[in-house]
Amino acid sequence: MTTTKNKGNSNALGNFTGRPPKFANAKKLLKKINEYFEHCHETNKRPLIIGLALYCGFASRESFYQMKHRDNDFARVIEYGRSMVSATYEEYLLDKASGAKFALVNLDKWSDKTEQEVTQTNVVLTMKPSFDFEEESEAEE
Image (cartoon, rainbow, N blue to C red):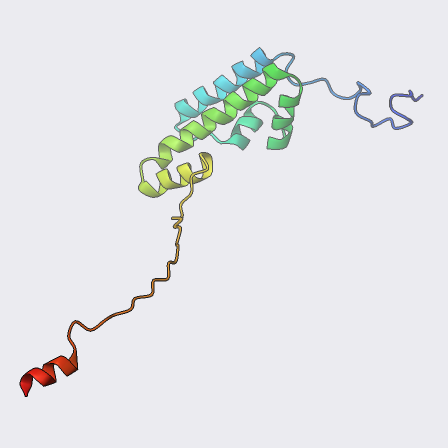
């Protein structure tokens, strides 16, 4: 049985079938995200985006990121998790100059090239001798 909303496509979005969402609300997802960071701290492992997604029960980063489309609360929680992973990497990167440069270029859109403006001006000089050969030769005679 099809509805006019799905226009004959039983796989269309909005048909409200399929598996229920992993998290009923954003607070439960936030709790799981915080558990992941505690787990990483306890096991001395660096947090990863894919690690966060898998720990929360998602099969991929993409399915983890799709949660942010549910509503604004989920979007904020997903962004919080991503920011926590990024903050951890920034701390590791800042131990070295190349890491700091990488962070500034890639995270804050800095430029690592020097831009110079070159202008060209043409100046014509006409030089007049400071002495006259004829006057000198007359003085010598």
